[in-house]
Length: 122
Image (cartoon, rainbow, N blue to C red; front, side, top):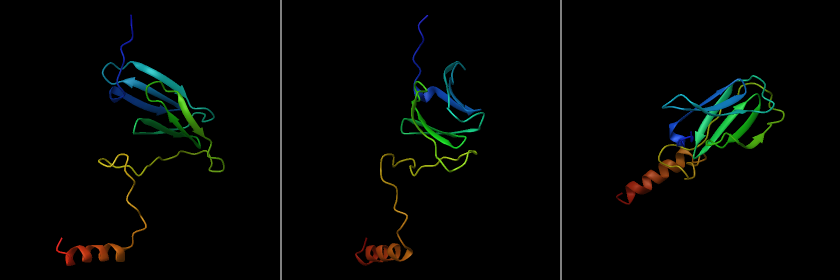
């Protein structure tokens, strides 16, 4: 019997005990399972963004192919310990692919920009 192809949007990604797995949300069938090297039985934190499945566990960071579970890259994060990790990016809904808003803009610059807009009638 031929295996039907599952779209990434139909997968549920799970991280536990140093493993990441993908499960078909419709059927509950496990599509793949990947062991994250050198993480032991650590908690796995996951983040899916722009076609990449990012994982962190036991002081290591990974990027996985969400279709196959293949490890695309692995960073050992030397010197940062081996505890649980949190993941975050600067992407927000609606600006995928855009540069994040600069965080170095001062209040004075914002006020000056707002005043300039008001003075020009905008």
